[in-house]
Length: 187
Image (cartoon, rainbow, N blue to C red; front, side, top):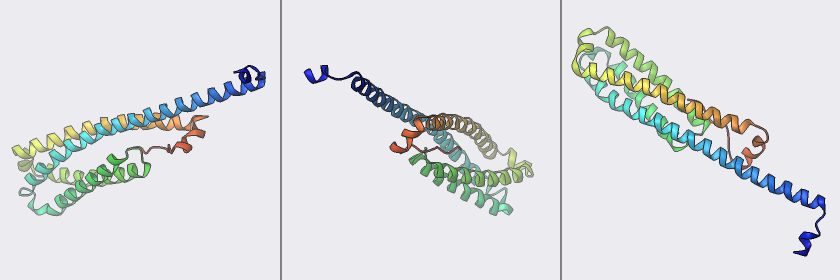
């Protein structure tokens, strides 16, 4: 105890600065963890929208097999693109913060969007098929899931932006690499 009393003013100031530094590091680390967890929660909403879309897509594509029999290639492409997007989403679910996984998911979604656009363009040219009950219901469910997906993607991107901004701030950017925090990808 007497050694603590014998500390000089400089030593006390150094101890105080070290204590402030440690408390700042703990606070910055906890903030980055909270922001990363917010991204994981936002991805869960994206994942829910993706499940809803997959549930709508399978019956829709099956219902279109007969009326669009001449366009089986387009339906097969849509089916394959849906499967690829599903695999990319599973990878993204494992680590929603990974920039490379986000880029892979975005690429798979772009391929699915192109294939789905072709199928819906073909459907527009077949009014009897478009008005059939299973097809109309499936198309409406697809559109609903797509609008939910767009909203969920925006929530995720907002969370990713907040996370990236926190990592980029000085002095947190000095701490981030030490604990493995890297920029997040956008979807």
